[in-house]
Image 1: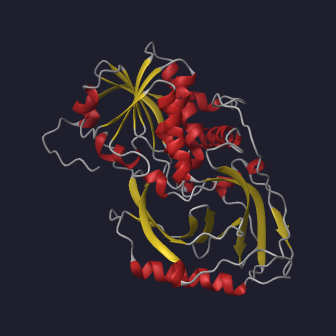
Image 2: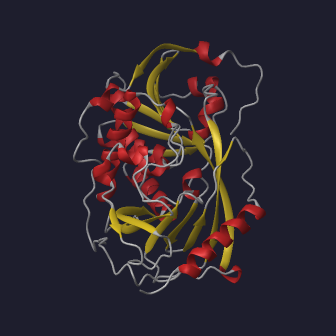
Image 3: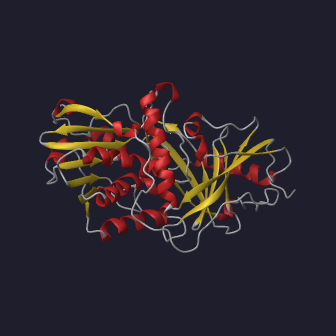
Length: 386
């Protein structure tokens, strides 16, 4: 929520103490993330018959709804650091752009390492999206008593709107990031990649899936993928080898996190381990200072802009159209040049996308939705069996 109280004290002055930058990012990723065993059926992504991919039925009659969300984007990348607020320690963990779900476990690890440097073991986590809930779980696993405070709970969080395929996208402006941030990003991506694998085959709706990249030019890893190239092992296909009409196609095995199930289950995990989840909209630093916990982990996403005065963060509006599910469609595609992507969730196929910087409205744009539908119809029309 945007804070419009003009009578607050200067926020930057109120945040005293040094910025303890996350030196934990320089450490090697921990191999065993959350304490959970993967059981049951295991979904495996493999190079399928790429010439016989099921065609998405993109028709207006199959549309079930449109939704828009705001990505918390910072040109310099996400923030993981510690500061003091009066007698409290505040650890920040926000600003994940278009990959909050992807990086949730990794930046949670960085934030919790900073929390462990304090003497406090009672923590408040602000936010109940993917980042906040992952942070709460890791705090629990490392011996903290945790209370989660959130203005909204799943399914009404920004994370619920995310398409949530594992991949570091729209995270930062490459020209604005530092070598230190790249190290943080690499740690977070590797840690999260390992963490999400522990949920595959269980009841959180995380599974392997083949992710196809389409283009008119040869497909290469973007800079933010290239920070951890071992996580995105591209398979390149010769022209005409796949069902896609695009002259250049590559794919890699990725993980698909169905947020409409995953977030509810993750919140249940937090509560099952004894933590309270409190619905409360914290509007000011005074509200934060009044919390009873001596340690606060700020996972407020875009709300951190006004709550903690970070005007470097801006919203990037993303819009999705949902159509009826097709169980036979079991792959993802992205055409980055046209900003078109398709994700087959169990509750419906998600069609995107859009990136509108500094737009605060969450009202879907019908004109943009029509452009997205036309783009996906063109991709579907070109999909043939080879």
